[in-house]
Image 1 (cartoon, rainbow, N blue to C red):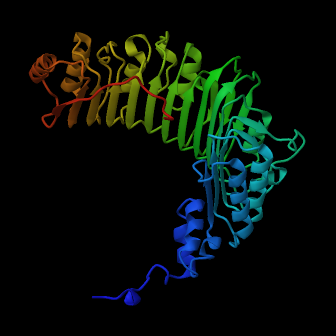
Image 2 (cartoon, one colour; image 1 turned 90 degrees about the vertical axis):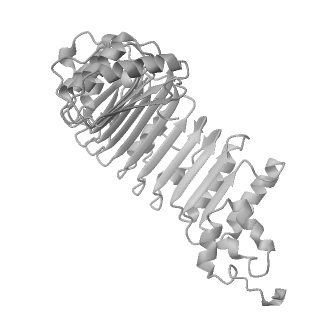
Image 3 (spheres, rainbow, N blue to C red; image 1 turned 180 degrees about the vertical axis):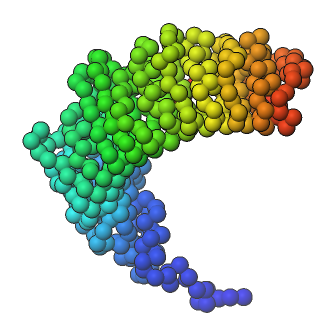
Length: 430
């Protein structure tokens, strides 16, 4: 039997930089607790390069928590903090205290700041820092007492910026965005919009863009987007109806989940994303596009997913199928009770290999759509039909029988049935 004295503590024998890395992977409150393990561990946590605080802290009073965070900063010996994270939405922390902690993190040459609080005061020092590469701000109310319209913002190394604001945005937000000349990823989510002026997002280095506005109490004139190197675009909420896309020549993938109330904004939006290789559309309204002559072509499209309404008669589906000669994968999730007409005879889907068809109830128009696809797609490998729980076994057997009688242009095509509970299309940001 091995005695306790012969047991080797392999973890404690690891080099200090490795121990520091391990402790940096856990919340700071747990890393600090390791100081009681032994003399070897008493000061090891001081070298952690991530400072992570949240509202599940072990202190019943806010004063004790703020003392804890202050003590961590005072004892921290690392020369550079990689990540400073503060997630405190359940309780209120005074803006001045959060601002003080951000300043202390900046003094430690922080690379990433992630602050999620109710009320936020941004210190002046945050707007001119060279070490910062990623900035995440989630807040309800923003206070910038030192940043007026004449002040400059210079964040030369920030490549990732995420801003979530629950009240109306202010000029500060857009000023911060334009103060990041090397920005590659931008996520801007706004709950309330009460402004009517135009905004311009001219970001030549941007590769990923997420825009969302949930509610508006006033008219938005337009948001102009000029991002020639953008590869990924996600737009959600009511913003789509007012989005003007000037340059998306490098777009690869786009997701749209929007309310559309007029023909023109919808057509202009589709023109802006028509060069994408992958397209997900989740429309929340059922308006008709009156004149399809203005709909764009989709010459590069390989993957198409359509959810929800796309207008009376689903003209948009027909237009994309007509022009998407490179299309390989098609996924349709139609609204409950909706009908699909068969594509127009001019469709040239030479490369379509898979179809996923969701929420089918066996209506005749739906059957005609599937019949046409099976009879004309020569390289189709698989058709997967997903039915909701309201679809009875008898209905499924009837549909199977009908589909088995349809001629198939592809001898390799396999038809599969699956079941799942279908819910209304959720936000693409969820």
